[in-house]
Amino acid sequence: MHEQSLVKTLIDQVQEESRIRGLGRVHEVHLRVGEFSGIEPRLLESAFAEMAPAYWDTLVQLSVEVMPLTATCETCHEVFHVEGFHFVCPRCGGNVQVIAGEEMQLVSLRAERQAGCEEVSQ
Image (cartoon, rainbow, N blue to C red; front, side, top):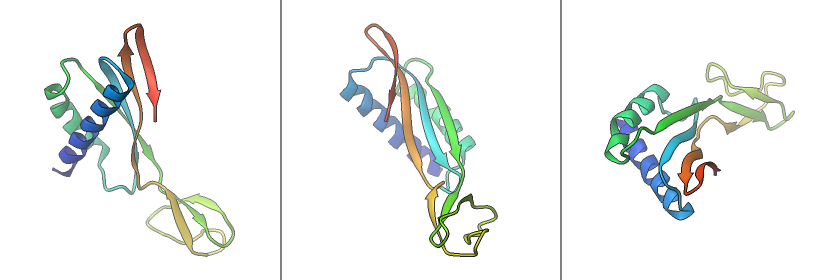
């Protein structure tokens, strides 16, 4: 499963960020996943729930925010949601450039420090 390798990479990244920032117990991991990234959020969440207990002794929540496939027109600069894989500007018919919707990004962690919980954004 492709999502398992992504989750392993994500866990490694979270552990490294935790180490660098001197964080304690991780409570939540917040991701942004583009709708055109090739990642199925439910499969990612399932793989995370299955794999996380091997790395953390407490429950860690995974929050996944799906980002719409968004493009901008190179001619009229219209910004729009790409629907039905129609990569043409709906306003003028011009060529477009994708600006969001292909990513998988670690957005933030909610974790403990010595004096309580803190949210750490990327």
